[in-house]
Length: 117
Image (cartoon, rainbow, N blue to C red):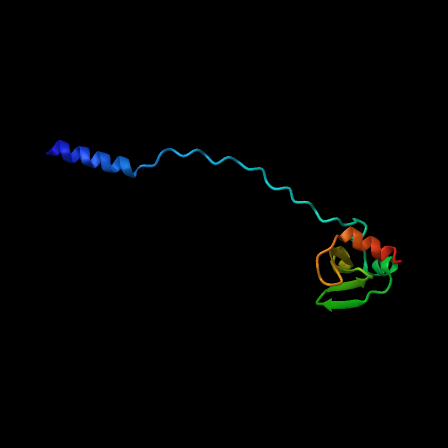
């Protein structure tokens, strides 16, 4: 009887065990493409932006930051300026969208604003 009990116990434990699993195959990280953005826009001051694109359609101050919005026929460009060393406000982020609000290529929007036709 003891043998039968030991055999039953061993078989029960064996049924609960899993087969060794293969380690997961490492998948390469997806390539994230940086948005197209002309580097000369980043770091500009408000005066430099106005000199580049003209008078902004919208200007919003929030605390120490500033948002300037430039509008073209096909797109809207929002430039966000935050204080940098010395307290000078400089562009640190840019968003571009079509007039209906859909994301659009930043470089194409900047080019359209630079060369309105």
